[in-house]
Length: 143
Image (cartoon, rainbow, N blue to C red; front, side, top):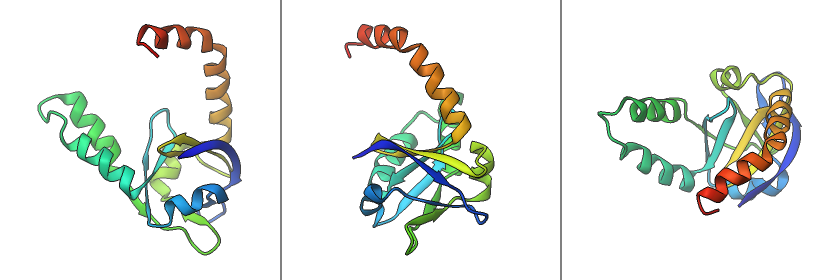
C-alpha cells in the first residue's frame, strides 16, 4: 500500500528519488505511465498487470475506450530503482507532467503519483475547497 505525500527534486538527468518507505514495494520492478490530471502513475509490476488486463478487455469499438487504452499503455515504461533509490523518468513523461525541478510523490494506495510541485498545490487547493461537494457526490454513490 502506498500512502503519504513527499517532496523530492528531479536531477538534471531526469531521476527522482523514490520515498524510502515505497522502495521495497517496487523492488521487483515498476511501470511508469501517463496519469490523469497531468501527473504520472507508478505501479508495481503486479498492479500494472492487473490494470493492463482490464484495459485490453475494454471494447475496441468505443472511441473513449481506445483513447484511454492508448493514453495508459503507449505511454508506459519499465523503470528500475538504482542503488540510490532513484528512478529515471523518461523525457516524454516529464514533458507530459510538466516536471522540472521540484516534484511531489504521493501514495494513492495501489500506485504512486508524481506531480509537478506547483500543479500538485493547485490541484490540492482546488480539491480541498470543493471537499464538501465531492463528499456529497460520493455519498450518492454509497461511499
